[in-house]
Amino acid sequence: MRRSLLWKLLGINLLVVGVAVFVAAITIRQLSDVTFTSIMQEYRLRLDFMRSLFTESLARSLVKVSLVAGGIGLLLSLVLFRQVVRPVRGMMQMAERIAAGDYAARAPRISSADEVGSLAESLNRMAAALQTLERLRKDLVANVAHELRTPLANLRGYLEAIHDGVTPATSEAIGFLHEEVMRLVRLVDALHELSVFDAHLPRVQAAPVDIGALMQRLLDLRRGEFQAKGLVVHTQVSVNGNLHADADLVSQALHNLIDNALKFTPTGGEVTVRVTETGESVRIGVTNTGEGIAPEDLPYIFERFYRGDKSRSRSSGGAGIGLAIVKEVARVHGGDVGASSEGGITTVWLTLAPPASGT
Image (tube, rainbow, N blue to C red; front, side, top):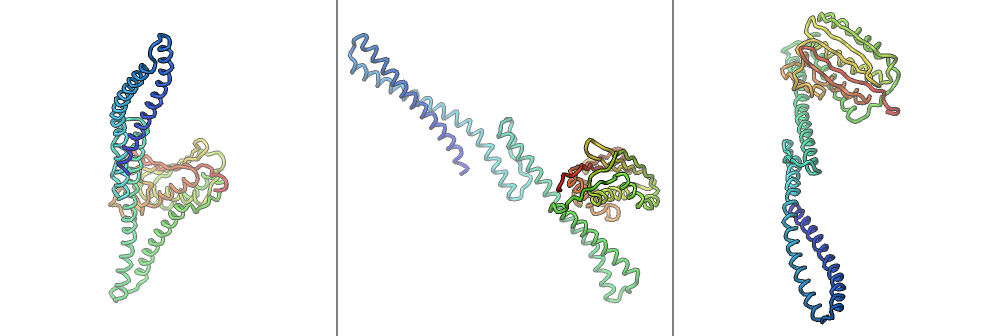
């Protein structure tokens, strides 16, 4: 099937040339016959003999012209069609490699700006996106296994020690086991929340929300943690009126942003929360001082289980789910997320637009 495309194109081209020559031959024969007869009668020459000579000469000329035109058309078509078929075959081979799991495959670059060149660029962008998704999928599986392995190993070790009588079942040991179980519960709950977003199950319960008051309430709840680290918190709220949004989902997203700032702001640092209007949406940004985020990590911090610094523990770096939930909350509200980090100043933000009715 692959090899037939070139010959199909050539066959179509030859068919067009043949039809054109056939029509031209009939037209010339009819016109020349009338003209020839008129000339012969005007000069009173033998009509039958001269017409036979003229017809044979015309036929030979048409055959020669047809062969030359067909040959030239065939050669030019062969060159042209090869330029079209070659990149198409390259894209077919690329598609086969991707189907086999080789997401690093790319179509050959085409300098032309026609539809074939645009198709090659689109396929390469698709392959790059698939390669990124595959890498994130592998990271997700590895990180989930890592997040589950450590608490399960702790639970197993303590329970076996208690069962063998090596460690007594003290309240302290039971408290530690309870802490590990709750860590697993929080991880599973977070995964469930993400799966719900993936299935498009959450329905936004839109209602008027005072974003400034909601943010201040969340900061008040975490005030003790800020004070324990000696952090200075600044708030800047410039929003007129309420936002039509889901208060529970927005509260969850803001809680994750604040929690993120608490984890990564060093002792004595500063945290600034800004709530501003940007057109028809509201932008909520949380800025903190600290080490910052590497430029190569910025595009991926909202991906699930992504942690730029692989050496961070769960206590300092989290499981990498909080910002993924922030992204989903922004998405169901018709908004977006983003981050910037430069000179030790990191800002993570999301926008919230009024959801459409019925969402």
